[in-house]
Amino acid sequence: MGANGVPSSRRGGIGKTPFTVLRGLWRGLFEDMAKTRPAFVQDLAWRLEASGFDLFTALIRALPIDLASDLGAALARALGPLTRNHRAAERNLRLAFPHMGDTERRALLRQQWDNVGRVFFEFPIMDRLTPQSGRVEMVGGERLARIAASGTPVVFVSGHFSNWEIMPAAILAAGIACEITYRAANNPYVDARIKASRARYGVRLFAPKGGDGAKELLSGLKEGRSVALMNDQKYDGGVAAPFFGRTVHTLPAGVRLALRFGASLQPMSVQRLKGSRFRCVVHEPIAFEQTGARTADIESGVRAVNAFIEARVRERPHEWFWVHRRWPAEAYAELAAQGY
Image (cartoon, rainbow, N blue to C red):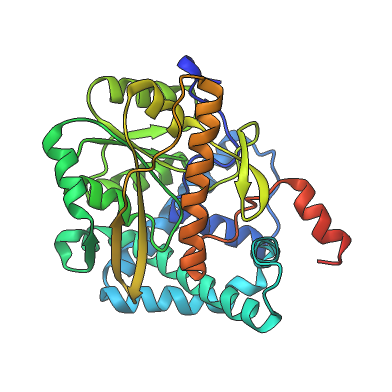
């Protein structure tokens, strides 16, 4: 637990970059290399990986936007089912939609790989997928305008919907100063490149996972900056709350911060319209019971956030990031006992 009650450690980080998605897919196809390496070998491996990242970025940026996105979709549809992440996604679908038929489940798995591939191949060209590009339709954008005009910070919450990088791009395009939480890449050279890539579409205030990130969120709100968090991942030691009829553990930081600073919980979601065109929705602020009993109020807020995430997933299940192990180990053990 970090300073002032903001969690400072977590499993998997607050949010994923498309690069961490690719690493997961890669490790699903091939065994991890030896974990213990001499420092110079590790540094060489990092530099080679960063060179590959540079080459990939250059190639994608040379392509038309829709072609790049279509290429990513085609590759992920072909390679995704070969990875161990495919089984994770299938098991998650069984937990969320236990009555879904096999045919529908297979179709949904294919669709979610299509989206994952698009997200990764769109990352190097995110500066061309901002609201100013004409490729992002804003719904409820007036709420962002009011937040920017008021100068009053809010706590943005969302999940890994469609291309989730659209959300920070939309927040910043509205003129809102905002700390964006993220999970740093293990490779420091690639991490620097990811930050530089995000800076092209305005993301410059980063709050990394850990104690330092918690301090940055707190200081940001104190200084009038909003904060943005992803709230759809497993968080060991988090608040227990329902999600698709099962109890999961959820990061409470957003609710804690909203309560401490009297800030609104402002949810957002992203929908893919066709190819690399999107709809970014700024929803009504999340209302939850605030009685003054801190523990009960935090639990109430987390339940409300989970309900928001679940509703968005049910609306467009093919656009959620299904490869993350969202449910507790007992849920997966139940599936294993059933032969899944």
